[in-house]
Each structure stands twice: as structure tokens, then as C-alpha cells.
Image (cartoon, rainbow, N blue to C red; front, top):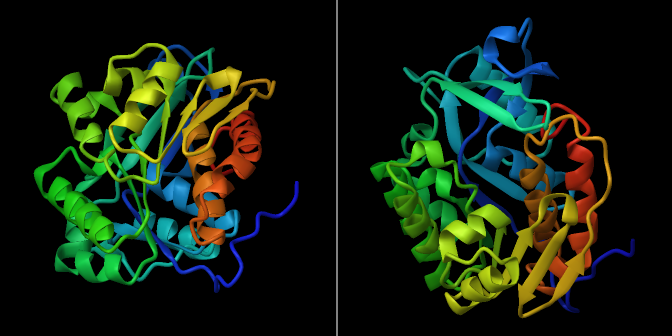
Length: 311
């Protein structure tokens, strides 16, 4: 695949600020139907936004993860992994008195994961950033957010302030709703919170179910149109094994890639990370989304052949 070139005259890429969580996934590395059937668990790097940041860095983007973990052995393990992957950590802190969140994960025979999360999760974002969010956004070229930091009141305030400031500074905002409905009081609350972040977004990436929840449209074409009308410049809707579509300022259709599915853990994070990394590498040149979508779909499919999102 040819390299994606930024417009002439553009300098080296400035960093993208990824606002969200890192956690440890303890995965039972065999397909089972019930947690009681698990006989062993293997630690893997996890957290949707942290996964995206790592994949974006691997794709060539300069990214920083804004968030934190507990000041414990697992937190140090996560921080070391992020550093090894080239993710900037100036906005990532290990918080005294906090427990690094751990997810016990099982995978069924269709490759779908079930999570049992222990410890503090998204609360570490507000605790790590505090009043530094405005400075962090001003020192970044773009912002990546998800709905995971919209559930709690403090994290929602931090996220929405970051979004508002980025838009006022004319910095690109990329949204992956990544709706985890069990975290929300209702599906309507989840949809409304995600929809509040759509206006002004350079890119919204969601799967077909998320698009349907947010727009009320079961058809992905109609869902994409609704999200564009709501204010997104570009929308990528992933269709599982059938690939993905891009609508809005640019248009593309990418077929799926056949793989033997072991686990779908983090497959969407991988796809988003590739798109974000290529955007960051090109100074947020919109054609980078269309140019890299086929590779993003392929990498997302290959992620289903392993147990962890990034390994």
C-alpha cells in the first residue's frame, strides 16, 4: 500500500491527545460458555482508548494517553507497556490510593467477550488530569474521545470541556462511541451522551449496532447519513465480517477479510487506531481515512485471530 502523504508544506505531526482508560485484561485463552469453566487467565494490555493509542502509535501517529491507573504493580505494568509502544505519558499518572482496574474476560464460541471488571475504571481520568485538561488540549493538535468517559459526572465534565476547547481552537476531534451499555442507566442516556459529541467531529467511527442506537436507523447507510446530518464531517460504520463503509465528505466501501475468529476483543479499537494513526501522521488530512480504511479493516480482522487487542 502506498504511503499517505500530507499536503505540501505540512511539518512533522504534532501529538494527538487520547482521553480515556487503560486497564488489565485477564483473559481465559480458550472459548467457553460460562466463567465457571475457566481454568486459567492470562494478563493482556487493555482499555479501549489505551488500545487505540497503542495502535495509532504503531501506525506512525504521535499520541499521548490522558488518564491514569493505580499506583500498584499492575499500574506500573501498564505504564511500561505504553512507554515501550511509544505512547507519550506526560498526561498519564499512577494515582496513590487507587486500584488499577482489572477485567476478567471470557470468550464464547462465537468469539464474543464477556467482562467482569474490578477496581476503579474511568474515575482515574478525572483524578489524573484534574485542572490540567485545558493545557493538555492546547498543547495537542487533535483530540480523541469515546463515551467511556461520559458515564460518570466528573469524567463527563472533563471530556466535554476538552471537546469544547478543541473545537473552539479548531482542532480535529475524533469520536469512537464504544458504547458499553452495562455502564449506563439506560440505552437512551448512552445514545444521548454519545450524540452530544457528534457535532463538529472530523470523524465518527462506530459499529452498526452503535449507529442504530444513536440514530434509530437499522440500515447503516441511513445511520451514516443521520450522523453526517448531526454534524460529523466523516462517518465510518463497521459491519463486522462484511467490512466497513465511509460516508460524509468522502465515500468508500471496503469488504471484509475472512479470518478464523478466536476472539473479537479489541477488534474495533484496532480499526479506530489505524485510522487515527494515519490521520495523525498526515496532519489530519481527511483523505487519509479513505486511503487507510482497507488496511484498517484488514488489521481489525487479524486482531480476531488472537486473544488480546494488541497482542
